[in-house]
Length: 256
Ligand SMILES: C[S@@+](CC[C@H](N)C(=O)[O-])C[C@H]1O[C@@H](n2cnc3c(N)ncnc32)[C@H](O)[C@@H]1O
Figure 1 (cartoon, rainbow, N blue to C red):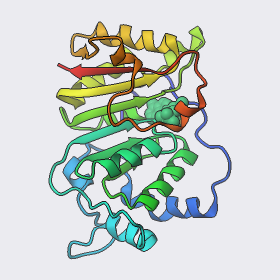
Figure 2 (figure 1 turned 180 degrees about the vertical axis):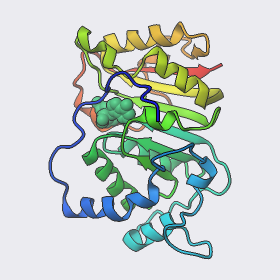
Figure 3 (figure 1 turned 180 degrees about the horizontal axis):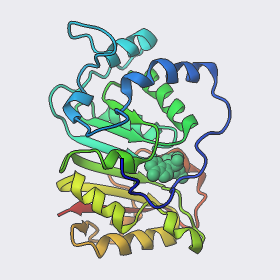
């Protein structure tokens, strides 16, 4: 694949050693949920029963989850047919991703996160929730976006991205003109980009970048629209830490 990205946008990709249960899920569950490492992503195929395990309609994800979470209280069946497709970029520990997947069982979710411990944490949440409508990629979201079909996404979440507050690091921020080019290609007309940050400069940076791109329209009509989270928001782990320099700012943009 072309190295289309000039700079790394994330920090560490590994912290403490994984607990045995999480390490086990990385070995056994992740292969059933993983976005293929190369080639154009066939979304229907990605969410169809995996050939890795099972025959006769028993899918890999279902089989793999059943072997872990047979007694989970909230079975969440794999979506049949083509539900909406949502991409969450930098899902951290996966709390938001899994909560959304449980709340919207007919929707298909792709989560991307380079941080190993975050991916392992997300697998634990997926197993506990018995969520079958999530696929994961451990790595850079830009690699996934580059391989998605045109006009395939209904929603994109970028929640509390790495702020890179020092001016000399602004070039590492995820929101850049090239990133918007890639997003514009894969978002359907009318699809929504949802961005949140608690760093004032990153909010104004994002507003400036996105509003000068004619392919996106900022959906705010009044101050409450950027001061309050959108309906159905699930608090993220980073959000609760309040590490930024302002209250969270919530930006919704529509793909024209
Ligand atoms: C500050 S954390 C926030 C995590 C989570 N969204 C939350 O609110 O709790 C930002 C996350 O974005 C991830 N990230 C940064 N650049 C990324 C990229 N290019 N693709 C995917 N994830 C990325 C980082 O690894 C990190 O886990």
